[in-house]
Image 1: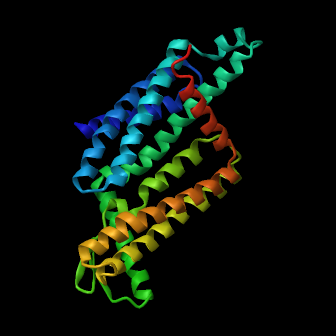
Image 2: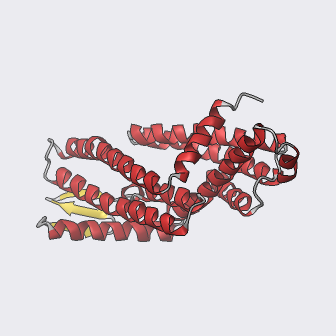
Length: 280
């Protein structure tokens, strides 16, 4: 049932993205898609709380709140009947450019969700792609370990170091962050050359840094750097690696924003829309 909400939402995002900009049907389709997306993300924190991952539980909860706001903003745009024809009637006012810019930003956000969502959930929900990606990341992590002189073996998605078993799961591939950056970079209106540059700095960079994170977690856990293996894994993965990943993503995000200042405008528009959501 939950997967149904997910794929229907992604399908609606794609339909809304392919539709004409600033037209009421696109906002209606987008609003329904974001509402269904909210249901999916609102349930996700229970999974992460069950495995003690409070970082991702918080992140998915905040994502569900974001989805609610975007659904409401699309609904408001639909009810406001903002269109190119309508905008011409008020083009001489100061309000019209702000309305048009806001609706353009909503369209861009939905496009980003379509691109990033299809990218991520194809690997998250399609078992063949899921297994393939995990196997690739596992084998490459072991290759780096061996290159560093660490005696490591692997079987499927399990890496063995110092007789201890560390399992690689989808979250260890960095696919979530890569999908996020791919979505916003692919959706924003900017010259192709700058978008390619931003993509190359972010997505391949995240993939490489994620492999290094896996190497650190595996070595720290296998050789019990911080105490017993379970404690070492918790400190290495849930504390040090999480903090390091967050800092790295902030640095990458800064670099992307420097290359694509259009994203700064998009963020400002979203903040402005949230602030004015309760207004007329």
